[in-house]
Length: 473
Image 1 (cartoon, rainbow, N blue to C red):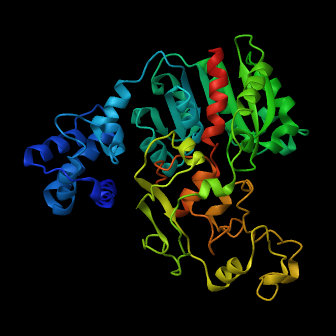
Image 2 (image 1 turned 180 degrees about the vertical axis):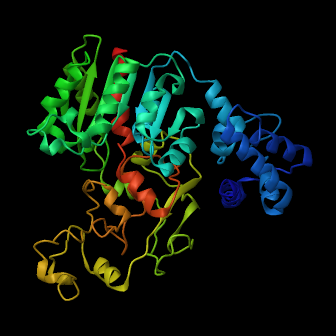
Image 3 (image 1 turned 90 degrees about the vertical axis):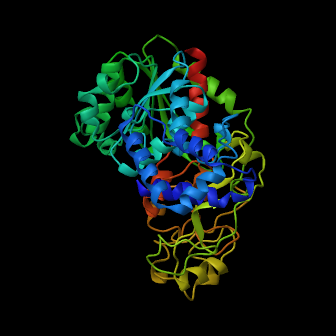
């Protein structure tokens, strides 16, 4: 809990120049009362008590809260403009209380960091239930989706969700089930039916939730390789009375500056032609501008690779900070992913450690160069196996879409070398390529942030799919 107080202190310190109004103790008490407002949420109640304790013992935090009152004042609460609103119980309660219950309702299984949920939320849906087994994913999801009560963001095994689905849902009825269950056995689909393969129990649980909740539509995302087993998948859903269509969609066609092909299944039980949904998706895509990697990297502060091994907890001006002030310059793409919102703070823009050899390689390569380039032949590791490791290093090309962002970035970013700087992409840069807004804070260990981003569905892709389905709903 202490980390949340540290976050607040750091954010307010970074935007100190915005606070010019003289404040009184009464103003400060009012601001604190809003942040720690009582709310029917066990986690938020515990966090409030932590804040109160910290305020009595941490004079720096108390001073920071005083500065915040220039935005949070007794005359007019401007919560949407506040840089710490995701930490404030008053803002969280207002977001939850003001949700329009007539909005389409969704369940997100295997929600990860919440990219697909974000796309659906931006398109006007409300979340009834989200679930994932990774603690860092649930922490990220709950922080960035304050409109969803914490008790409906469930950490744990999908089988426990299946058993308790009715009590875990926020709303009785569901319009859309979304998610991408890992399906480990699809490559062996010709030998054994997908749903009978014990490795595919998560896929089976997804279908079980579909049977229990009976949404009008479902959207299932998976790797392109699952196309070989798509006929089996369609038959499995047909057995629970859903008609299904599957198509491969590429994120670059949705305004996402990334070559990312994914297999999307859309099904319904209301007799609607799913092909018409995909036709509408293609129609909406045709109106979206194309963007490049340079568009995504625009306006982020230049950084150098960290030179201290095992130093992910160290924050410096040179290698970046987990929480930092934004440079306040935007382009069309940044406005699009931020939905024209002015964002003062940027999160997760922090370069990882690289050794001297890798930094030398990064500096010698030109955009588009890879491991077999003659400029690095003298220092290239595994040079005798260049035919195997030809993609071990790759310098990204700014005027093209980025290669597919993957969870492998948690190990190294040698295949994602910044086009202008001798380092790998930061988590924030990878998140921008995935079309996440700059105020989307990926929580957890540093390498876990790469994992969360790499496994995500780009929000802009999810938004168009959600819009096309919503028009039918």
